[in-house]
Image (cartoon, rainbow, N blue to C red; front, top):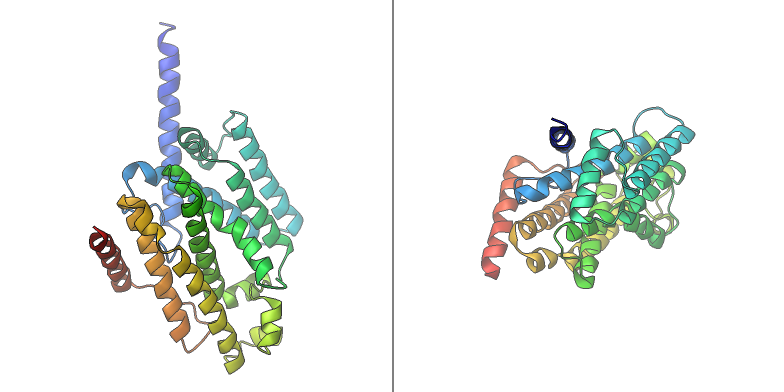
Length: 299
């Protein structure tokens, strides 16, 4: 009889991990994103770890942005997430569905935990830093807030060589810039943040009053077109990655890049720069078809 106990414990643990992944998938499904997250485009075995990565990042993002907590409370909760990561590194598993799924993914797929710590450092910065002097400062933030996700996906697929990592960084930084450009009003009004470089604002004669008063003026439109061009160049620099990796992961990457490019087009064309563009069902289907076609053309 005692020999059955370890098997029973293992079965309960396995059931707990499955439930934890279901929780992470639910997090991914209930948050709107312009880009697919843990979607059917990925092989089934990748969807759970991708959902765990997303759920971890989503929790940290919500701590930094949502609710009425003080800065001290937000930083303390982010530090708690860092402590949970260190516990996972030491072989423990914190009693929380997201950490349970994350621990399983990290151990099963040898994911580097330093990239999760990079994400947390960016969200801590969101709590305390609301202005960026220049584009270099902004790119340093992107290096920690967005690039780790792409790098984790490459590690998950065992394709983390130097060229692919560089292209992934370009895509992820571009997508982060896209998010900044589509959320200008929300970031400013809800969190007092401006992700437009201060030196560029001065160059284009745009001040904070322009954002506060929602002036849909020529100067702001020119500033945003300049930022859109930057993001577009970065996205183009990484766009070959979806061809490099191939398979269903490559298909998802191509869809993400095409989706980012489409959002940039809508940002450039919008009349009201404070309006947040969204991709409708028809556009998403068109992006999916184009992603399939790119892969077919390569073959």
